[in-house]
Length: 348
Length: 283
Image (tube, rainbow over all chains, first blue to last red; front, side):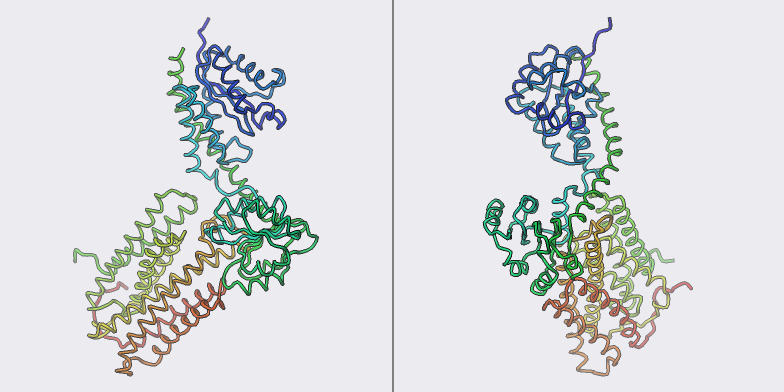
């Protein structure tokens, strides 16, 4: 009988294979992760491992002495999460050796993410690896694979257009504000409407340095509530003419049936604001801002459709880059696998 | 045969290096590379082109015994050279995205155009400004201010493109790399101030000598020069009072520069011709 080779493996579920309800069951909080780690450490043949758990994936990377050890992994995962092993059929995917490497590279580069090219995943992979390294779960093989995954992700981000262009409406709006104002720190942001969309928009602008935030709403108490959450000022809609003269970015998302910001109101404000441009973002349906205002000089008006169109264009551009990224990953995987295969043989 | 390159050879080299820089910048843009390498190549080509052009103008200056501003060819070359000097300062100070590409194209096109039109390079006399260095300073400052207005016209074009792209929601390709509306407006305003200041100093210096000898400057030159200065001054005042902003301000700056360029002809032709032999143009 031919001796079995040690192997590098990935066992896990992601948004590609498991619906949200299943991913919720499989998710590993700190307690569960510690429990699973303890089980893996006691599993014969598992010499190295790392756990990656995000809202979109639960994955175990590791080195097993033989394929027989992998069956024990499924059981350990099922026991830790309380899932029946049968429920995991078709949900868990197993990749071995160079395929496992290619998968980690793709995950790290954001190619396997729901939002292609997003960068948050790289931080999550790094955190997962740092945790495993600190607890001495990893060894020479996984250390090398993860380090190479980070290098590949960085290379892909630098040399392809996979991360270009924002693909969420709020981020697109913030990017556009940057095209108008450059630095967002000194701009005055006015949010009309105290709902959830308004708050999210405020947060998006704050994440890019905007400091002066005013929330205006028909109900002042609601405006105060949202303004308090955002660290800004509250105002009533009656104050709009005054505030509009000093605001640089206006994001409106009320449920009003008609225009909250009329052409005349904006036109009057423009006469009082010298040379400063005005960026209007209409996030409401029906629309809050009179489309005729777009014709005013130095006024830039974008509605939900405009922003969504830009986001879709950016996403299409990212998707078009995936093939290039996959080619880079294939090349780097092959190189790494050539180096790792003899090392894995040596761990027998 | 002289082992040293001639003034025109150096000016040709300068123009070609500018155009090579423009092509490099364009290719970088098409490939949407964000790496620092191509940008360094672009800037190196522009510096090399600028040195070659300065060498050519210096050689001319030695031959004519003064600032080489004796004919349309030299004026246009000097305007292109001034724009490049300003780019090195403005580009470094404000890190204006795409300004290097635009300046390379603009300076390269001006330099090439002047080289391709032999009648512009008419033979002129030595010491065309006479023995008075103040008159030479006056002329150099005036032409340098045209260089500033030239770069202002470029940033105005960038403003118009950026405004168009934002208004029409076309933000792909070149448009995405344009500087922000506010940054362009700040640069335009400062360039206009600098240009007006230089032209004011130039005319101030010139007027002192003109008052001593009013016959030394003919009426067309006087009217055109003062007219260009007055209009730019009015534009600056209107911008200061926020009466001329955004797209209209950019259009005015662009059109004004085209008119100022056209004014170089009457200004230059009003000067009496002398005889001095520069590098002969092969015809």
